[in-house]
Length: 122
Image 1 (cartoon, rainbow, N blue to C red):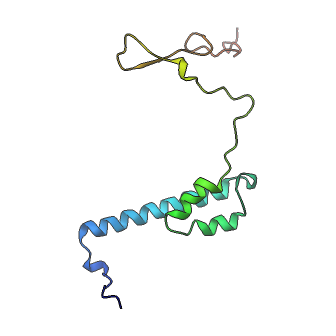
Image 2 (tube, rainbow, N blue to C red):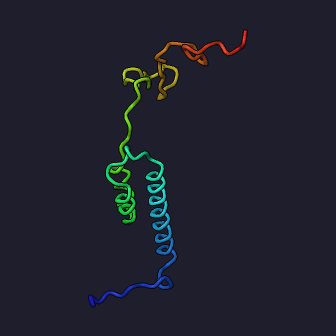
Image 3 (cartoon, helix red, strand yellow):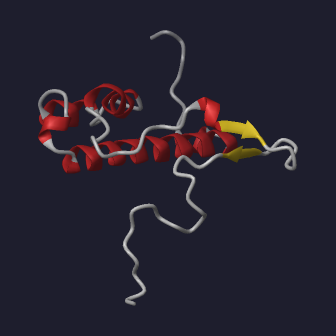
């Protein structure tokens, strides 16, 4: 032996016990979220075979994080999706100190959806 002894649960202090419980909860939450995502995600949005990623998720902390980082294919924007805001569109509003004012891209009055049909029935 190397001279170290394993501590039993009863030998741990309250802070150590709490750390173990929190770490276990985070591990189970990550694994559950990864498996749920893997089960719901279409096969064409998973890199490689599902069964392999299901096994990788079993590896503590690293497995679920690896799946979320490298195992998923995130689909790109659809052709009808609005463009992302340009940084030039954000200007400091003189009346709001540190706040920011966003100039609307469509210049429509607030509450009006451009291109929407009149829903009042008249």
